[in-house]
Image 1: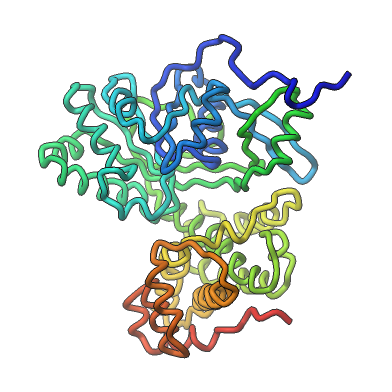
Image 2: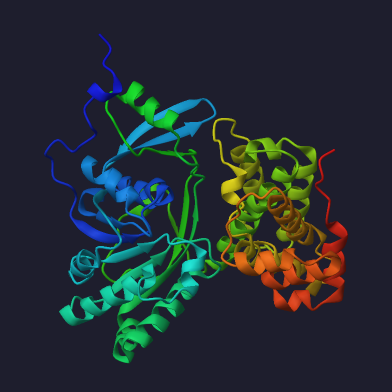
Length: 439
């Protein structure tokens, strides 16, 4: 007799011990689990490297994982089918509000690494209750305990994320205690990274699929594409897992690899997110299949590629692999999810390419088209009285209340104030509005 889902056992360690915590993670979410937790699970010394993962604003992820002893199922969704894997490296799933536990772990000499997936906007938020504010207080506990140096590894899509994390943590530490800022400078290594694995939202169907195929209940599985990349640059004074066993690369200069990912992968996602929704599409795969969206993406790639010249980047191969990944018909990567926080994302994805092209005497039309698509998307969303998410939402709404060129200048100013002051750039963006109107 087939058992119903409620009769199946809950995924658990069945009394087996979790790996000892040596990594603290801030930002427990699906991407962390499909990426850093997965890479750690595939290191040859994984049994020595447990992760204590703390949630961000809400405790939901910890509440789902704690009854499962931190275990979860990774559904690797390829074009030819699904593969299932239990990832055992999260030793503790903790509510981010539990700062007592965070301080305790950071004060432990055995804790060697802090990894971060806190989103781009958190690096500008220096509040004491922000993730980085909690991290600073935890580092104070480590200093007071004499627990030694530690590596802090940003895994967010921020250009120069290691340096950005360093500046943010030192700024907050200075506000807490100037002596703490000095300790951070002496004892914290900030590692820059480029991370990559498409991880769409988990659906109720995915939860049901795990129960059917695996024979246990998992309240919080994760879906990811087969591809995974992690490129790191920096020092690990307290040691690290053998992440290279899972394909991680360690390089001297992260910036070219970072730009390749930000411009080619993230930039393409941003272009498809706005152009695709304007043309009635819901997923990356649908937008890619639309020649109008595909041509806009390729034109932007052509511009970006002119500024990615390091041979090791293999830009033609990287582009071909991205097309294959984006076209995976079984990964439902929703454009509405990618479209969030546009003013922030465009600064890192469109603006550098636009500036580089203009510096060499070209118009940067591909990058300008992405910015124009964002503006059209906002007009459409607000016109339909639908929600959108942006750290500058209030300013965006004020700009949208304007008309014509004034609106273009105001919106462009939220992305880059200097570009908004260049008449030629404003003219170019303004001329591209309406590019993706449905046929």
